[in-house]
Image (cartoon, rainbow, N blue to C red; front, top):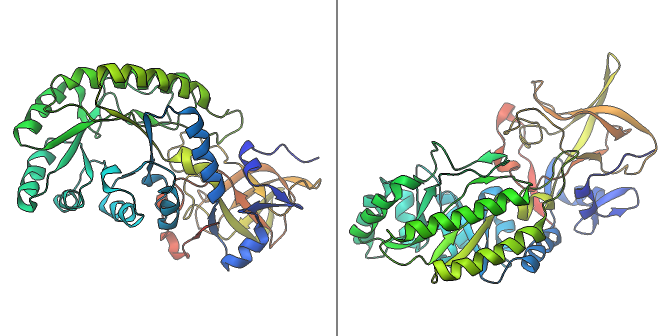
Length: 409
């Protein structure tokens, strides 16, 4: 009897006994790619996710894609057609965003430790810089004077609250991100004194959250904080980036985010913002939620071993390509991503097996004693939920194996 499939698997329909990506059976896609391992990202799944969001978000809220989740240029170019803006975290990502044809006024740059060169590139490009430190202010003012180009800035605020139940907390308490809320009034005064083109605030509290109530609470607190700080701003607030935090289910027992609940709450937030910050546009910045479920990682079984009664499927890729799935990218207790033998879906012949990569470390583990269809050498293993923080978040050069190919289908 076959095991229940992860909810994300439904986004990749079956053709016979194998999954399809972009309408192609996976074996044919693998032949087209030419080798394994590879990542495949489905355009239509990403478009459907944007459409889902558009149906629930109020029209006053802009939808931005955070490139850090997946900076593949072709993917960013596709996303730029459907979202309202792009958010970058380096000069390299800025080049990708500009090459994608996004309006420069809808590109913002956040991240600690921006170099003077990066700040100069941002001002020259005319994009919005989310200031993370007082150190950036005089540098930006000097650059603006040298270039004869206004330095568009927003203050990234480290709030005095956290996004509860988030996978990674980006605000609240001591953080390397942003300017502490209590220090912001003085920094706002300096921003005005230096003649910087102030536009608003960026308040990002956390990521990978599956509790709609927690996200809504953080959004309300972010608006209240921005309204308080607006009294100290050198110009009216024209942009308030509420961050994101929208999570996707990876592990057994996790439920998809209640998106309609968040949409209803954002409508109330937008109504309140129209009164408290009448010139401000609200922005929701999402990465993983837009692309995470649209991607799969595909590797081929190169060996089948039985060691002291346990089955090991050795595949041609591992943590060097997909650090997250190996459990070495933020997990406290390792859990299995959804994994399937992609060309034997529904097979009644099953076994408990571990999927391991070719690297000389026991950390190279993609599936730990999972219930899988019985696989043979040459079969394809697929890891779902792989569209975000995959290839570029992994140590691709580790032990000298080839990098994974990435394709947009």
